[in-house]
Structures are given as structure tokens and as C-alpha cells.
Image (tube, rainbow, N blue to C red):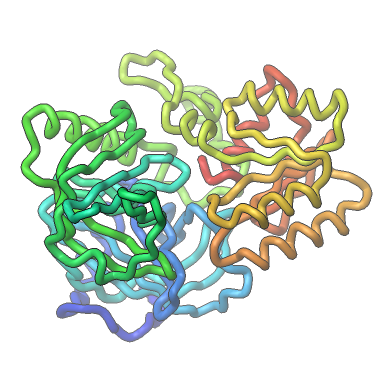
Length: 422
């Protein structure tokens, strides 16, 4: 096997360079479809959530699917670091970027070494901001402070969340804290997690386990206090569902990467049934709606920029019928971009516009906005067109979609993929 050279080891711990062990670990990540963070070495950017899609042992390459696009200006051979769990241990492994394979699909070198970076008592399950799981905590000091922000990860023993707001409870004034505000061992006797899957509110007590700065944001880790039997049962149920969702196969992982929109070929037993973007087969063989996908659609902020009229009303109804409920409508593209610029604290939004003759000028405005906020926010764009045989888009954040029609769900899978819900 001819493996390319990777970057020198710069992580913690004694590195492991056993090729068989590394290959087996990567194969486990592929088969279990585990999501793990990968980040640019030495950069102050947030990590990217990734999944192994294909392992090319001949070329020594990994094909990783990310939940958001890498910067267009990222150079080939840029150094990255993968962090993932194997058994009861957590490993860090260096790799290098080798280019783009498809939409949100990138090539990286197979790591030649890896090392234990820390040990954890409980497996942590990541949460994305669009899932809207939110943490609210109150400390025990006087006059007392309230801390809140989106959930980053959750385990049976604790959680981590991004600190978006700290407020003094006596006069409701906002506070801008530093890392020293969250000293290790600080108590939070009131801790709530809102909008977990199948659990609207989870109440517990917490103690600060760590606080660190990532890309200008504070990530706060809290260890749960002693949980009652009912509380432990509730959190175990949430994590069990989370684990089942992560392990459920979304397709044939042993195949190589496929081009976006491609279908699996027919087999000897007959053609593969297309189950659609929003359904999965239950163990009993009955169809049940994919709750996480529907939740993702409901929570995705979508901006529809079209002139008023019957066509806009048709598109509006089709989007709401597909489950996109956070739908904002503006008359022009310029007004939609102005709204996005004004709300810098909001997460990424999906922009839907009509493909028109002056498309280059409109795309120029969109690309300028994407470049302006490339480090903090994505702006995927859906161009609606009535033409058939649409050519594939070169820009992974701009995709031409067929005109949506109420009752026709064929375009929804493309919109889900563009929004990062696929």
C-alpha cells in the first residue's frame, strides 16, 4: 500500500503507528457511521463535524463528508487533526487535506499515527445548532447569574454548551465573562436542557468541569450532580435514541463515493426502492416519518426572496408543506441579504430565490455575502428553475433546483442536502 506522507505528530501522548490498528479503527468509524470533529491545525476556526464515507487503501485516502463546506481558499496539503473514540478511549490523529470529491465530500490522507488524547467515563453525543437543544443554568452566587446557550454535546455524566448569554438576575443586565468566571468546581444548582428529542425539559444540577475558548466563543462543560432514578432513565432514553440514529445505516457504506443525486443500481432481487428523503423503514417493515429530519426542517431558517404574486405564494405553500416552518419572505434579494447582515447573532440561513436572466449580478451579491461571513456563517442558496436537465453547480453552496410544486416531494431531498440535513 502506497500511503502519502502525513504531517509530523504534534498531539499529546505517545503516538500509535500500527497500520492494522489504524485501519480497523477507521473501518469501525465507517461501519458505525459515527460523527466526529476534524479541525485545521493551528487555526482558530470551529471544528467541522465529519463522517467517514469511503476508505481508499490503494491511494491512502479517506473520503469524509462534512456538515458545512471548507473555505474555498483552503490550500491542498493543509494540516488537519481528527478526534474520535475507539472503544473506551479517545484518539487524536493528524491528516492532510487533498481536495474536494463532491458536495460536502472531501479527500484526506489516512493517518499514519494516532494517540490517546483523553479518557472519558461516558460516550458523548454531539448536537448541532440547528437541532435547537438549549441549555439554561443558574449559579449559586449572590445576586446570581443566568447562563444560556445551545447544546454542543451530551453524555450520561454531563454536557457541554456554547455560552451565548450571561445575565445578572437582580437587574437583568448582560455580563461579558471571561474564562475566569467559570472556574473549575463552580456550582450550578439549577440546570435545564430544553428541546431534547422526546424530552422537552430535563432538570439537573451541574458543576463546572472545564471552560475553554474556541474561535472567540466560550464552551462550558458541566458535570451532572447525582441524578435521581427518573432523571437517569430520561437521559438514558435520549442517548439510546441518539445512538440508534447514529448507527442506523443510511446507505451502503462499503461502496465508493457517489455523485450527488446518483441512485444505487438495481440488484438481482429487483430495483432498489426509493423511499424518499423523509421516511425510513422501521423494523416491522412499516414506514415512519424521520423525526430528526422533520425537526431539522422545522428549525432551519429559510429566506424566500421573490416579488409578490401567485408564483411566490405557490413556492411559499410548497415549502411550508415540506415542513419548513421558519420561513421569512422578502420582495428582493438585496432586502434578504440586508436582514442577514443585521442579525449577526443568528445561525446560518438557507436562501431561496428564482433563477433569472440577470443571474450573474445576483450571484455576485451572494458570493460577496458568503465571503464576508465565511468564518462565522454559511449562506447556501437554492436557485429555483422551471427548465429541465439542470446542469450541476460548481459552487457547493449554490444549487439549481427544480420548481417546487405542492404534493411533489422530489425536490425536497436536494433542498435537505443543501441545508445540511441529508
